[in-house]
Image (cartoon, rainbow, N blue to C red; front, side):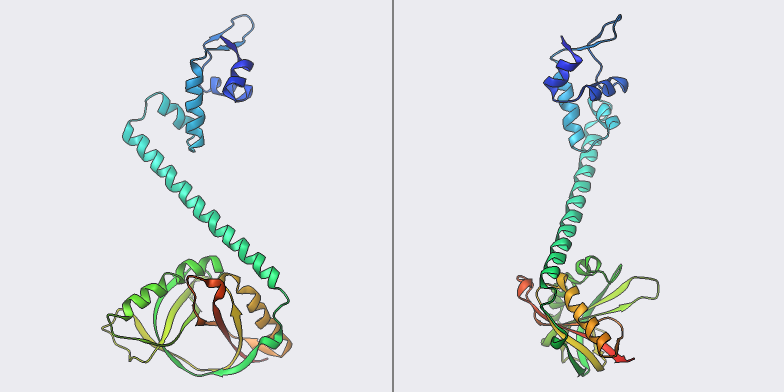
Length: 274
């Protein structure tokens, strides 16, 4: 038999961990010296130790590990437990991927800081425009909330246009409006059309009103890095005595879903004199 230190080294775990497993009844020593209290283990117990470690790495709690090893769970319960853990890990990976994308966007924004100037801003009147659109609600106007909501709307909108014999006559236009119940935002994914409204269609045709004065700027690249362009608009508005009114419209002049770094979007934010 092996001392607890020898067994810990063989199993690549700590002595403290083995003592804890003993206390909770997960892995008892093969023998305990009645005089000294020293624990001793057999080589065969390495198998159970390895099972404990493997199940822990799957994310099971020690109580769940003990239930599995003591055959207190049937196969169906174990399968359900592992499927739940798989779903949890998949959700975690998705969240981490989204956070990584946000960090990358912030880095790109910092790298482009200062390249755009207020001279890139154009003040102009925006005429009314008719769009076919689909809408959905995002939890807030923040990029991580808006992106997952608006991105699937455009493929679905174009899928519905063809059977309705409605053809785009201009660029896509996204616009936003705050709901009355807090931070939530209604996301409008639209594309310019010449069709008349019809209740028979499974999408809406609406007229966006004219903007008598809008501060506009061309944003180059993916929309997850749009904050830098928005700051340019904010600085221009402040320095020139204009007040921003509501959210910016996004006019996708060169829409590149497969290569967003090559996309060109005009941001149009309504303004009024202070």
